[in-house]
Length: 119
Image (cartoon, rainbow, N blue to C red):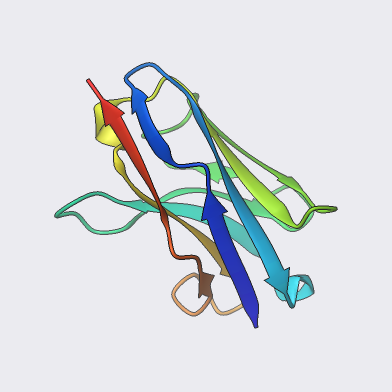
């Protein structure tokens, strides 16, 4: 089992920045990729970014390219999502997910952290 705990969400004005953290514990050696997803009210959950165990394999959704940066600290078993130039449409609950070889839907998920961007 893997446990994921997100933190760092909050309320920020448009144009501001936030850094989300995803701390993993348990069988972290089984994780191939860690990703960030988000779900806005009334919308489906969508992919934001991912990073591999080695720090490569980085991909971003088009909507966040150039504004968000995903990184990791393996010594701390933590993955970060640095979010800059935030827009009101970035408002959502942000979830961390771990793919251990069965895809995102079969992986582990955190409880989510709320990000609210005011205009």
